[in-house]
Length: 451
Image (cartoon, rainbow, N blue to C red; front, side):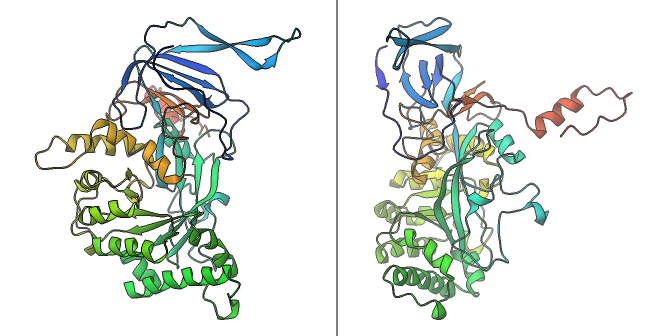
């Protein structure tokens, strides 16, 4: 094949969960959206082997039949010759093929009905612990929220606790949305802390309290590392202070929720005070007012794209041009977070709205490629999975979605979803309800609940 964008890469050095049942498949004649900010490619070819993408190609000049045979030199027949492996070929017939959507900061998989406390593990406000809470222990891969999101083309997500009685919400996890019982891609992938108005209320009623709460925690973690932490005089429990050790060393990312421009500048200053912190800013409704400082700091942002109303005093300068203006200033911006917390399948709509915004006079939106990257490769990079998720390139996870139209159009839907190279079911409780009542014979008694 000609003009290879990338070639087969070595196995991942990271310890990700990969299914042994991954399928080998080649998709041809696709309209490929790589996810890196570039424009779509017509006539593309993508090949998945062993759960990993091994080839992405423009596909020009080569026609494959019903199978794509190759020699597997790692496996040999009785005569010692490499085995010939026959890989099924899917002719996309010009349909869109993209990386899976990467949902940045959600709560999918940790509750069934949010208002029913017994079914909701999205927070632990009565717990004696805070930073040590580990959301990976609560994720239910059979959750209908995961199934609905998967049907919307979401293949990976970062999941976080809501804060309770501490500004520390605990340790989040990166998951895949596969139907298998092992959802965790990376447990304890980040710590989350809440500042701004909400953090102030939790800490004691004012920003002075949340500021001191955060710095005291950092100081206790430093003392713990130095062997000078004295539990009887400390404010944190031993598990909480231990969980902050990888944060202060930069081994675990610190997601900080802040909306107001002055709060954002305090976050930037925190980086100067604790230079090893690997900070990600969450929210940032007024981020455009501090865009140049954010760009200079290198702190990436996960922003709500449609947060354009002064719904609180910390969001008085909110605007739909926020993401576009930060992007123009050079800030790495992903779409997600608070506004898309429960419905990450809507991320494609939000990204499409930012494309439309670019057509509005004096507004700042995104190009199609930038918008699609903001829900695929960029959130993956922010989470620490750069080059492994949210992108079509050799060496990346086999998370691939086929669509019946432009994925940023409201009328488009996924037709096939692969996670780690395994094709996923797209049915869920909502689709079953739709099918149940579509042609219901009113002369029949109500059908039994089919769960």
